[in-house]
Image (cartoon, rainbow, N blue to C red; front, top):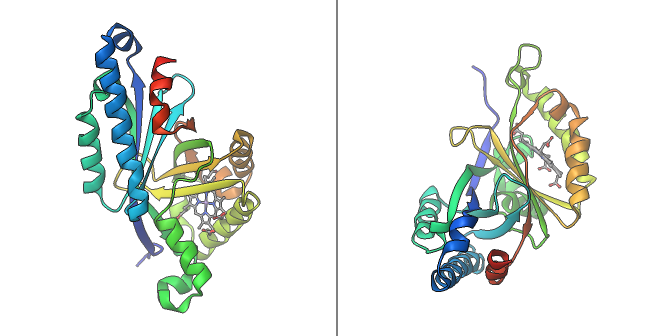
Length: 254
Ligand code: 76R
């Protein structure tokens, strides 16, 4: 029987993309707009505060280009938590001025490629590796200004089919991929979350960095690495800038 690599799952992720209905916003009475800003800020402040409780993390980003205006990123222990957040947002006066352009649901994952020993016996690996793995499963949203999100899958073509490769071939390819990634240590933080059975592609990739050129460079460099050049298939790309909830009014009123 073919065996899929072992995986361990952590927090679930919701990437919630919204566009602002600018016409409705401009036409709305001043007090409606003020209420939307206040309720939007309060929603975001409460979502961001969970970080202290170690129950997840949330962040707000403004999205460049036509695909969306805002991106809410939420990491939470369960899908129920994410569902509650979606409903809570709909209760705010801000929601009436937004439309959802797209969204993405996934779950953070560490797979057997990261460490065989960990899956054989999590206690057997050293503290450093264990906390590295835990960090991947319960990610923080870093303070870096820029975020990039895109969904991707591994190719299942006639010539190149990722899922037909042996574990050791896949592990070698992922090790080389990891080597490319390590060159960006300190510049890029990535959250790789599986969306198999949850959304349209196989993973959601979220990259954080303080220089947008580093984001462009890592994606570009990986395009030449076989794990991506032969086996990567990509969805739409989004680029955004972090901003604190307190700046929501400034963002909306320009
Ligand atoms: O976790 C580890 O360090 C082990 C090596 C590693 C694995 C197993 C690793 C390292 N990744 C792994 C798994 Mn990754 N990663 C991506 C993308 O745009 C593209 O071409 C690809 C999008 C980026 C930018 C990135 C960054 N990685 C995966 C998987 C799951 C594969 C599977 O299970 O079949 C995907 C889809 C994926 C995609 N990766 C790294 C990085 C970086 C920066 C690293 C270096 C390690 C680190 O800094 O944590």
